[in-house]
Image 1 (cartoon, rainbow, N blue to C red):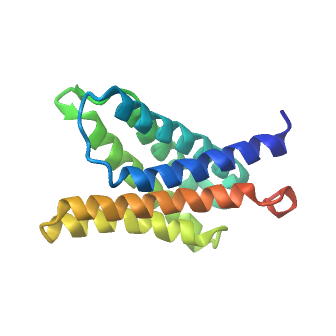
Image 2: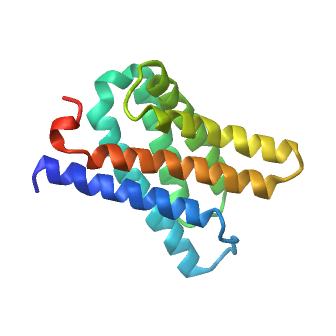
Length: 172
């Protein structure tokens, strides 16, 4: 497979993962449903592929802070990809979500500061934890979760669209 084809496939994965993540925000969670757990795992795997390609193509512009953000986000996505459960008294899904949010905030700071295309991806990822916290603070955690899921998914749609751009439009 050529590098251009690999980037294109990762773009499709990010785009699909972002769209499915938005749809997943509206699906009530029921623990133990194999089909639902498989759906979530496929989303997370698609997001991992897109995140990795996006980072590799923009690593120089993202710098050290972006690298830290990428590693933290990748770790968080890896944590939530497997079956959810408790480890050392922690809910691994909730912990993974916090890790993802922290990592995306770090990456987004660099995306916005350095105007890394697409900049709106950084704003979407920055909005996700804010929307979640605002929903909780207002007494509507479910609405905050949905709004955050939409913002999170939109960020990955941006990643997908950027990766699907013609090779000449990709950063060197």
